[in-house]
Image (cartoon, rainbow, N blue to C red; front, top):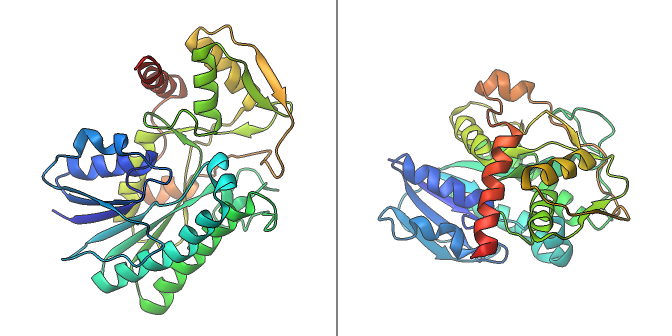
Length: 312
């Protein structure tokens, strides 16, 4: 049994991680200040004897008694709606929060995993995006607060590995979806599903020709567990290499929900990536990992979750 601390553990991905470690028999310490996370996400296992919930902002010093074997740093606003409304907290959790989490890992001699993002590639000039691509990021644009916070967090993590000898991992997460996403998250999956179920117009930015790839949450969690066991300290992409245009995705949501919602066009936001497709050759070779859940299957589960919450 390991003792695992997860920052941002009440968020969408963080709560699924908490649940997966509990299922494996580990003790879980969830640290979250509920800026974008939700107590509802951890409610199903909140009373578990091996689960501890700490209400704390990780930009402040993190103090935890006893040993800690693994620290997974997932605290951060992660949707454009959130980090455009919370630019300074986003920068602080990527810098100060990462520093504090790394400091705790060093003090506890714990393995440290950083949740990074495909956004470190910015609006990429190469396709698909490999881990050795340095990206095309506008540091002073509105999205820069998230992109650069994650790029800084990666640099800080590698500095702790190289200078302090800390055992570290970096996962670059591409678009992931599934149950426990917030309806007003602002990203395309919850937007389209909520709009379709309510009979509202599906908001497509630009012409809808921009591409995205979608990874189901269970596949991501499986990949993260494998990465924790791997001996590689450089970033690893976890995502679905199957690319789809936003317009194609909108039509698929309408088909799966049976909705008659129209498609509504709005101007493309500044620095919105035109392509997003991971190269997962490294994950395949290093982890023996690739996505297993088909898009239709994952969307059906997600639509069911959203339907229940809209009725509730």
